[in-house]
Length: 216
Image (spheres, rainbow, N blue to C red):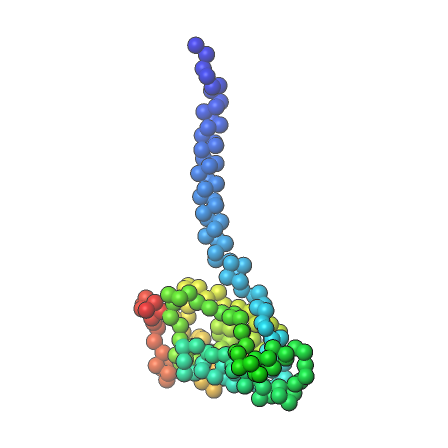
């Protein structure tokens, strides 16, 4: 009796089976790679805001310090967003007829806050406290990048667990004097390691890598 399938069909079956398994594994691997890319984390993508606020102008031209607007960054888990009154402190007199500032004026007269869009965020199961980092010598630029050079702010750091642990395991290179926390141009020069070790001792910086440091 003749065979139902030719002899070479066994080889085709084996190749197809291997290809199917490889495709499934490849799809899983591709997804694992994708979630680790800047595209998935929306890095370097400027975030649209209800008001066209240019940090380059406010920081570089007007020399406005980060803490002037983000007033709670040194004493609260959140950096805080400026109330409309802060904006109107200047813009009630400067550019007070500008079309671009209409959302600010509308917020001021209605009493409703400006609905700013968040740029950086961590999952709900992650605890992050701005104040403890700032008061231990971690500068704004370490996480947020050169905001003073951004027309529209975008996420610079990946904000992944591995990225956070990299600093928690060896915080010294990231430390700076408290007087330079908001200085985007500060450079420790060749004394980075020596100064970092000195500041870590002075500020009581610990290498917190246990789970409950961030997951509470």
